[in-house]
Image 1 (cartoon, rainbow, N blue to C red):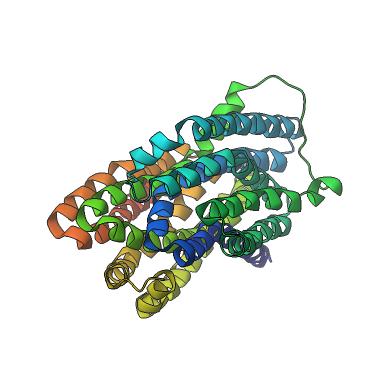
Image 2 (tube, rainbow, N blue to C red):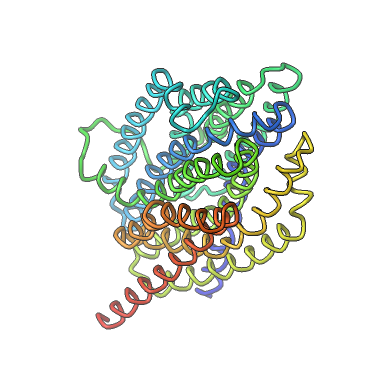
Length: 440
């Protein structure tokens, strides 16, 4: 019965979480589709240069949300109710601080940031516009990420999923309205994206209006220990998103020299589809996170291992289906985003899809394993994996392989890096498991 209950909870949380994160990933994918139709290759290139900044914002929100919600779940399981409100209040204060910093960056440094990201004279103005408004909407993105995590961990995964899907659907509808009937161009794309988390926040209001929430704002001093815990436990979630941004910035710089703006636009197609696939694995990881933390709080290590097996089997099944689909339909997938029927864009994108997404099972493994570590308060191994993935290996690998094999090397840098990290992660997990068994 205990095993059946564990599987039932796993299925419920992960399915709802995957549906929700898929909805969130449509923020940028919808932009990609409508921008490609309304603004062509230059619009795609401008959007692709701006996406890494979105990764930084979203990563910050997830860092605070996952870090705070992990401690919230553990304290709730252990009935440490006095700590819950202080965790929530400190997490929101931290979210406000980051929000102000991002907004000021949008007001003061959008043009400099566009230049730093590689925008040339053809796409400079579009890139600046997208960046400025993206950063101004940062408070909505960050607050939405934080509250989605807390609501999900407060036994309301359905509401969390509904809020994400409502925001995503609104983004798609508003994208079409702002770009085509209203003719707002790139400004319309970012306005649609920026309003989506606002709508998602409104959709979560029933959790407070119906008094279902077990967390509240309280008057208190800022506690550095809670802030440190938030940042430490949530850091791998930040690195996972930041690494996507760092990879995009690095790849954009390399591809610009190899294939120009058309190459960047092609990479934009690959990278944005990657966001959707990553959202599936993030959904599995975020869905199982409250259960990891709950069983950890109860001291039930065996059930944590069971949940991890469920998550990995699910990930491998999804990976096989997704890669077969991408490999078989690479041509029509690219055509959807190639409104100008650019043959060079088509050829680069098709090759990129087939090579880049060899990484799928390794990305899924690394994402879930890092979440397992942080959910059970093992921050150090999660930090090691995240830093290796996001900064230490991928950047030199991209430069090395692109020098050897040009664009083919660019596409292969990501799967080779993720494969290497998966092997490191497996060894860390096995070593950690052996030590625990010896202690028992």
